[in-house]
Image (cartoon, rainbow, N blue to C red; front, top):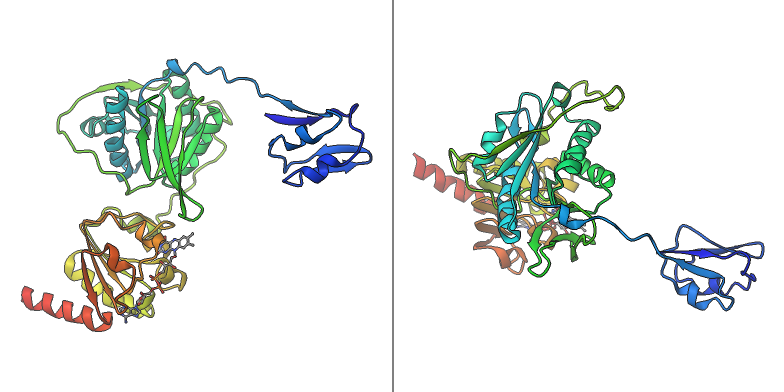
Amino acid sequence: MSVNIINEKCKGCTICVKNCPFGAITMSGKLAVIGVACTSCGVCVDKCPFKAIEKIEEEKVTTDLSEYSGIWVFAEQRDKKIMPVVIELLGEGKKLAAEIGCELSAVVCGSGIGNLADELFEYGADKVYVADSPELEKYTTDGYTKVIFEAIGKYKPEIVLLGATHIGRDLGPCLAVKANTGLTADCTKLEIDPDDKKIKQTRPAFGGNLMATIVCPNHRPQMSTVRPGVMDKAAKVPGRKGETVKLSVSFSEGDIRTKVVDVVKHLKEMVSLTDAEIIVSGGKGMKGPEGFELLRQLSHRLGGVVAASRAAVDAGWMDHAYQVGQTGTTVKPKIYIACGISGAIQHIAGMQNSEQIIAINTAENAPIFEVADYGIVGDLFKVIPAIIDELDKQCS
Ligand SMILES: Cc1cc2nc3c(=O)[nH]c(=O)nc-3n(C[C@H](O)[C@H](O)[C@H](O)COP(=O)(O)OP(=O)(O)OC[C@H]3O[C@@H](n4cnc5c(N)ncnc54)[C@H](O)[C@@H]3O)c2cc1C
């Protein structure tokens, strides 16, 4: 809905200006003018004594929802390797597909990637749409968007899931705008409404203080980007087969407006917190970057990786690539050792699904102990060297 001033009826009384809750109406001479702050709430329509403001209903959406079926997972690959989040999406997609009673498919783009279909079948895809072309060798927003948008138009999936990686966060909104549909970004939970089989997409909002559940009732496909590390990975069924569908790929000059000159691997790609089985994580209690050297010694002995809280990252002690939490990476290792981390909700959000949590903290009332399976109240600069000594003794 939108609202509109009928200029011929406006008497310039300014009642609408005074009553607009958003300060969106101004006067231009003797005429009221609706500005960009208008939310179409309609308060002014009722307040105008001269019936000079009208509501304009938007055209009804005419999407035939019944034409759309099936769940698609965007199978992001880098260097011809399927990203871990894709396996998580297939695991979640399988559950959702069973609830809806529909097919689970994957769509993969790249060059020389046809054999990835076999891996995607083994992880649960019933069908794999493959776009294999030299123009798709490196990810480009235009290239991937064109191919997948055309495939969506042709095959009409009802749900499209993408990992909330840098590529997924770039591609998802472009596809959603082209398909004129809704997208919920960075979801942490997906459910099917048993009544109407629509997908309920939940994501943290307002700095994690509120969990918003969002539905896309009238447009298709329903699209979500999903946080890596949150969903369980699909189990591999070796030898499982499915149907491969080749997508036609044709580009005209100017379709792809960017040229990828080089892909430089940043440190970020070398830190694989989502894959780590053991994470030794440090916070503000590490006192400085040198403290993290102690954590490296411990993680080295345990075969794990080091991570950090945002406070440690903000202090410049560790790169953001190591940050665990709501604005960092979500992790689910077998063991998460939180050292000098208070356990703020934004940190907990990123590690609470770890199988075992061990906390070391001087403050016995630190919230981290509420989620910890084992807690050590003590000075980490004494506790960690003692653990290292013990591990060394056992290994010698
Ligand atoms: C929108 C938003 C997003 C956020 N995203 C994230 C995020 O992704 N990840 C994240 O971590 N935070 C995030 N935060 C910040 C979060 O709220 C906390 O500020 C942060 O997690 C605190 O980090 P910390 O526990 O390391 O530091 P502190 O809260 O300062 O805790 C340090 C702890 O170390 C203990 N300690 C001190 N000395 C020792 C010692 N010698 N031995 C043992 N223990 C010791 C103290 O008792 C204390 O509990 C976010 C905040 C906001 C508002």
